[in-house]
Length: 409
Image 1 (spheres, rainbow, N blue to C red):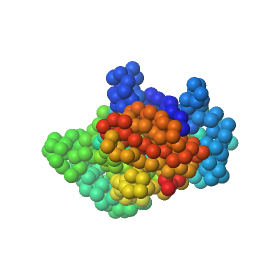
Image 2: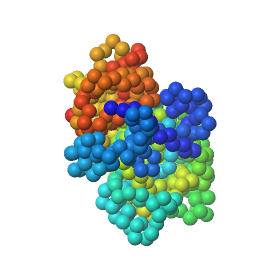
Image 3: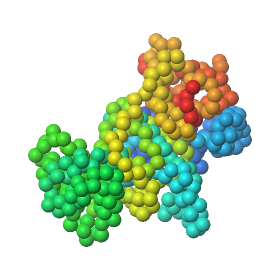
C-alpha cells in the first residue's frame, strides 16, 4: 500500500476551482484543470511514493507484474493496469464523441499503423488496440448528452421549435422513426456543406430562443433547448450543435452514475465527477471541439439504436458497507463507501489491484497493521499482494471511491 501521486491534466474545458478546491489547493488555479489521473496510462502515469522516492507506475508494474496486478489480471490483460481512474471537472462542454469496440479498435489501430500515422500525431484516431467503456459518477449535479433519444420524442422536440427550415428533416425522422432514420438524419446534419449549415443553424437557434422565451424554463424541452444555445455560443457554426438535438440530455445527481459502452455518442457538459474507464485513449470526435474530428470514422463505429440512458445506482452491500456500481466492463469495477467518525469502517477485500481516492474528508487506511493517512483528493495504490484494507474516517464524514479490475468480490 502506497500513496499515489496523480497527474493533473489541463484542458480548455476544465475548471479553475473544482479540482483545486477538492484537493485543498489555492483557488482559482492558474490554468483550467480538467482531469486528475490515477493509473498507469503511458501518456501520463501516476507515481508511487516508495522508500522516499517517486516511482512511475509503469516502472512499478514492469518490475513485478504478478505481485502488483495478480496472476489472474496478468493472464487476462497482460502486464498492464487495465483501468484508469480520474477525477473530472468540466466547466465547458467536452467534444461530441464515441469510443470503438474491441474489434473496431484492433482494426483501426492496425490500419493507421499500416498508413504510417505516428502514435502521437494530432490526426491519429486509434492510439492503442483496446475498447474504451467508461463509467462516470457525479460528485455534484452533472450534465451530459448520451445516446440517441426515442425518435418520436425528437420529432416532438423539433416540431416545438416551429422552424420551417426543419420541416424536411422532421419528415425524414417521422417517416422512419428508428435507428435507420436516426442514422440518416445524423449523417445528413453532421456532413452538411457549410453553406447549408450557415442557413439552417441560425434558424434552429432562433427557434430555440423563441421556445426558451415562451417556456421560461418550464417547457418539456427547456433543458435541451438551453443546452443547444449554450453549445452554439461555445462552438459557433458547429454542426455538432444540430446533432446534439438528437441525444438524451441527462442530469446526474451526486452518487448517480452513467455507463457508456462502445459506439455510444456522448458529450459531457458540466460538473465534477469520478470517472473510470478501460486504459485506452481511443476517441472518435464529430464536433464541439478544436481537436481532430473524423466524421467518417465516427459514423463507422456509432450505435444508432435509440434508448433512454439508464441512471446507474450503486447497490449497497451490508457485508463490507460498499456501494457497488455494476457494469458489464471486464476492465474495471467501481465502488463507494460513505463513512463517519463513529462507524468502525469499511473493509476493501483483497485480490487484484485497487486504487482508493478520497473525494470528501480524510481517512486512514489500515492494511495488515500498516496505516496510511489519506487527505481529501489523495489516492492510494493497493497491490494484489496486499491484505484486506480497512477504511476509517478521520474527519467527521468522508467518502472514498475504490477502483478495481472486473468485479469487487
